[in-house]
Length: 415
Image 1: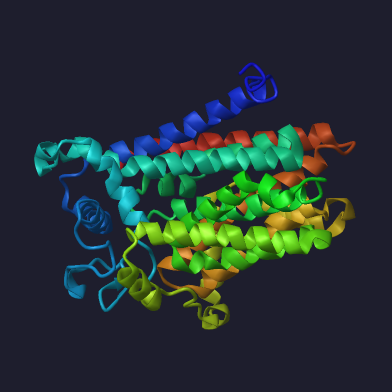
Image 2: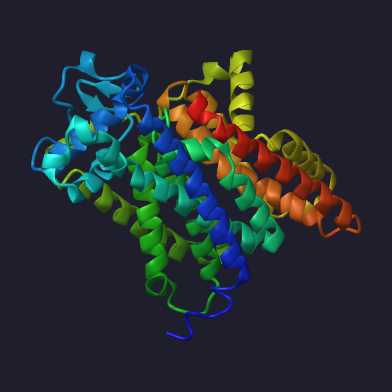
């Protein structure tokens, strides 16, 4: 036990990261509280229509009813526009989202689940997504710190913890719960990278890696189960495994196949092991659905740019600096910077190619990778002879960004 509670695992950096994550959680909880205080307004009811569908579908499945979204029991015309369906089957999500949304309600007595007490129990469906936001932030900090050191880790976490889009997604405030897919995609990519690096150890790699294989399988299941088009992370994970372990490609392929089998089993479990519902849902699922016409529309580029800056307004300054530095300074063009930058660019492109619900999921999933790319470049700049000037400029901008974010959030209850 004493070997686990070491200064390396529970030291000053972990304490400071915990404070930032608590600040993130407080902001997201503030958004949920603000929405629930206005829950009697008609606008709020309309905004939560898709959540009501998820709660009803998940609650029914948990109590032995129909499998959520496979198909929906309601007529297609009664479903909100956020729900994409084909013959009643949800084409974008597995039952995982509905089950995650409704599961916390099991802790509340049925007699209290009425409209009069809704401001109290309506907190419960948001708890899993609040937790996912915190877990994604913790994962981001861990990865960024390993790649970029303490400075890069704290920079990435600071940008994340005060990101309007990440806070909104975690609170599921007038948006869909894409945070689950973003966390799954992030976990899948960097778990695959971690597994690939361990293949150089002189051990029986397949059995020794069982924990990481299990984690990779869970991450794949979360990503694809939350958004079918996130299946793109499956070949991406294989690509990283094969690229990073060229001398152990046989082992890498076995590990990837085992992780895929685990992910498929978890996804099947989300259908409560009903083979007919699972097969029909997979037949109606939209695993691609991209259209390349979006790249010929100038307005799409403008909208994606606005969404990226909305995710983190500080990127208006930091991203051009990072890209320029990456292009001009060869020292920054190493795997730790290139990989997250390439994945972020891919997800942004897929966000543009998916004009419907899936596009928002890809754009949100690109944000953590983009933050690691920017933080890695800036951490390199902080190690140059101009480190004092660069550090002062970067943290001054981050301080202004944090102040702006908090002041903007404080205006939410006032409309």
